[in-house]
Image 1 (spheres, rainbow, N blue to C red):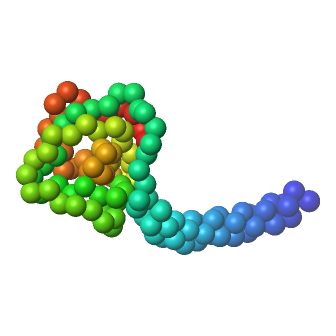
Image 2 (cartoon, rainbow, N blue to C red):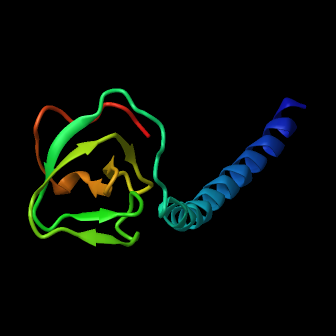
Image 3 (cartoon, one colour):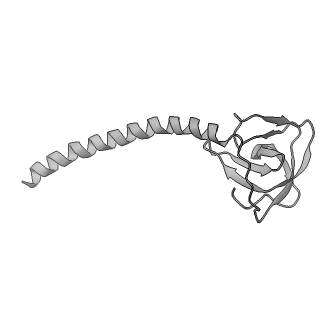
Length: 120
């Protein structure tokens, strides 16, 4: 009796694992696109403790959301900025928010005091 139950459970669990793996693969691609589209135009409005002050690199983009797919403005020189908070986007990249827009962490030339410690 136990052997029969085991025979039924093993194929069922393998099928369930295959469905989960397939579902996760399909969902991840769809979620990435929707997350990227949803973040453009996101401007946090809360007051965050632990703001940071730094310089954006020459040629840094200030975007409308924490994604390179969001529109923005490119500044030719370095820019001193107060960064309110940070976030990690769906691609795993850290972005910092200032009232001029979102700046990718790779476009921070240096910190005057420290990076912001609060997540948006």
